[in-house]
Length: 311
Length: 294
Image 1 (cartoon, chains in turn purple, orange):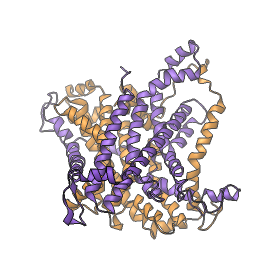
Image 2 (tube, chains in turn brown, blue):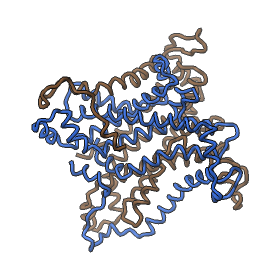
Image 3 (tube, one colour):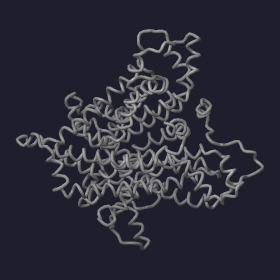
Image 4 (cartoon, helix red, strand yellow):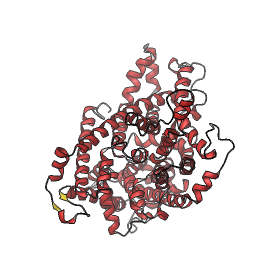
């Protein structure tokens, strides 16, 4: 990894000029590779999604292809109960996941920010699921939840519950089961970010508060929390977008089932485009998802007055 | 500001030098209030890890809760019969290429953002931020069409490009933050001493960026190593697939071979664990130096 730093070099600068002069073209040359990559592989696909959302486009049914106007959108909003179901589930999933991850992450960060014996080891262990992938998380929790040799078997051995219980295939337990699995992997993200921010709280503030006789709860409420606010707003927003978009875990853990119980909107879109080849409709759904995300993010930043109180 | 980054190279991150005699009251949290919740949370974190180790190491069909006698049959099987050897090589290729490409491109762009004022700068920054909201999963179809046109379907290069592109915006914002923390005057001093811009950058700035670059590079690697959807979509040939796709294949089999799945999962985790152990001490400083200030 250390070599990476040594290998990394900006692309060749323009033909030798006096270094102290500010070359006008240099910044453009430097951002060119990034800009080209993003134009070709983000901007262009986004535009083509917008374009196809107004088209009937299905490679397997070419005779129907053509301009559709807002047909795809009316189809989604008016005639597709699955769209509403998956949208509702997405909202529920994001709110529950981000809320729980934030609460647990904040609590953990506060704990491992204290001085205690074994802190370094404690931190390392607590943060360890951070880098585990969605697919690997699924693999681990499939092992834990499987009906033959999973935890339910050992619980049943101990007289709790019954043998052969599979939390992932029962519609009444699949949601909490999936939430716990994603929580396991998601909490360290918040804990790491919040811990990093906690380290920049000035110790003088606490000492002053203490002189004024403020207890720990008060100090937390009036010093720690306001200090963390921007980091919390930003990390919850990033995480919410990420949780909304990420399909790895649910795709592999439940496959959206049982009976579509855990299908998020992106998962539904993926199924529509990959299995049903209905690219036009999938593009319309993508556009809707994109607009909803953008709208919610702006509202969230407004309501939380992001960056408002800091100088 | 440099002083904020420089110590990150050392192991000590946050131990404040405190006059040992007086302990502050805010410091005196009862021990049980630390160890009890921490212990409970550690159980939640560690049992799943133990569970996968258990399944990977105990013989098939065993229900013992201790992996003894240890067997490596599952590893052998997954590595040879389930072609994890191939997947592993492919994943390493994707991970390392993404790391190098992301770091180099983001370093160039980040330097421009940190050091120059140019006309398109604000628009470019805005584009970087907006791209955070673009769901990669929802761009699968157009991306697939692009790579098909470029004849890159079934080539690992398509996955490397896709991963890099989605990794770039955040990496560039982070790196420009790190560069901004290095005073421009240091570079200028090097120019006065006769260095070109590139030499000055290499000698003066690059060493100070080490913690930041390590953080960004490891993110890129881990992300590319872990990510699943692009590989699943763009690589249909089994000899080109990556480890997450291999794991998914194991999971979606009609009767899941739990031992093989566990062993495959551990193979998937090893590089990430190594990277993680290596960068942990840089991670928090890397973040506090650059991320929060943006």
